[in-house]
Length: 493
Ligand SMILES: [Zn+2]
Ligand SMILES: [Zn+2]
Image (cartoon, rainbow, N blue to C red; front, side):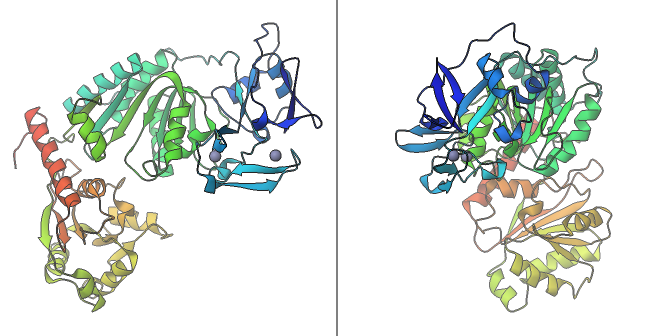
């Protein structure tokens, strides 16, 4: 759109005007207390940064002129370099020009966040400047009555405190420690103080899994569940559960953000998602980070006392985490190219099939996994393999849970989020660079999760130990020691 500034008011018009990004200063109008604003616009825009196309109203300009709506530039300039105000993209390679019908120019746009609607030089980002909606709170906010382990209780107290004080806190909870339960009292505290809360996670699966659990725990609270294509997209809610991508539509929205799996793809890789999480926070707000495997930088900051954190070093069942064993297996890739498996790998797998012990076996690459599959099917024809693009992925995992499959070969796709009660775990080719510390800790964390079967064997077959393997083992051993020290683990093994 093209705008002119008339009497210190931004006015859309075709002639004697400029695309919004070329207007140096956008005047914000004072709030007119006598103006009857639309409550549906209030609900739609509070804490958001939307495009005109997202807003079914022709009264945006009137609301702006009365101080209730804000216009921001979709694309801003840092000197001569463009910066996308929504996703933070400042890589010149990721901008392009197109003949734009709105401003009639070859308009520069951000390619990076285009899947959320195009942001170009003439795009205003529209937000709310009026009072926020004040949804009614039920007399009892939380119905959840589950029990917390001693480790969870300590972490819960820290989370509640951080939320009250609007601080940052890292919750470093081992795989299977039950980190979701640790959030419940914190969320209750925030909601009771009329704070707006968001739980953001990289994976849609997690949003879908958390939504019913939180709806059951907070039955009187409106909950927006946001992922690509979800129908809650415009729902105003005190509690939002969203994929990290969806945070791109929010601006200064939340008093409390809980960021799940901060180590996981794509959050660590995509700077724009970190930018989105920061933009979605109110300037005064709390941030809770959850992970089982913080990266090296964060671990160091924790040790040096530069980052506030709390650990849950033990699982609910009070048994230690299975510690991975390392087993050298020679040049396993060469073996596979000759349609063979290294003897110790084959032995490991065969012995489990014989005693009916289920196992997950991880491979770094699909083609080699497929080769291993054809070899192993000679011994057990019901063995299957799974990878990210596999359309039957969910069915196969379900069959594994139902004990219909003896052994599942997998890529890193199952490194997190999968719980199968009684399994052993192996990695073939643990030296591959895809298996970093965090991935290996997560993989080892698949074993021994249930109280009925708290033990499991974890073996990393390798053709040369890597730093990442050593760090992963060290982290697991450290957490077990911490668990024993704090009295959260009963037996020493
Ligand atoms: Zn344009
Ligand atoms: Zn962008």
